[in-house]
Image: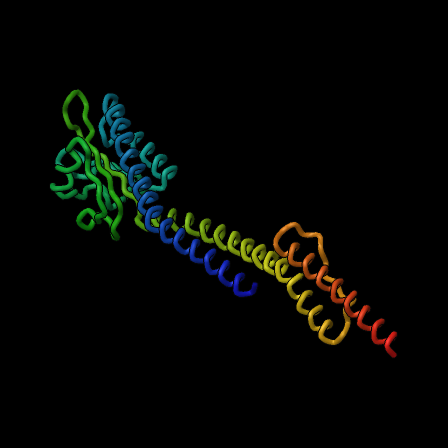
Length: 252
């Protein structure tokens, strides 16, 4: 039964390893894809907001910049707006001396942002960011004309952080379930082994002439049937031993 316990524990661990591999392989891609899809959706919504603001003022309006800052704080992303020529005119950073304003976004990225699907990719925007970020860009269209471009950038480590949090939950849950399963398997194995050990002890006492030993019954499984058969055998042996002792006494 100890070998059975080891086998059960090994199968459970193998199952969790395979499940973990599948979770890592598939779940990571799904999580990152959903995060990127959310960033692209933010870029689309932001382009609509900028188009609405442009009806009352310019795309470099201060009130619009305040809205960009609020959106950035609520989403954890960085947002900025470019003029049609690619020059950054507004940014979610509220610093008056923001180093992003006045920078020029590469023409290839501006062209991609002007397509129907917009731009998306992992990039530094030709040095605009210090480290690579996942960036989504979308054109701002008003009255059929492109009046600018909006970009939403998310730190790649933030996407990895979301995945890490999911992995932590998975690991804690898996380890807890594994421990519970192993404990239950161990208790079940011990319960199965108990009557077997009792029969082994009883057999040793039989060998020393003690035929009064019985094992516990009451189970309805195969072990219970074996215990009942063992007790019947013990009673038969005890009666035979009594008859043998009485016969020898009578002869004497």
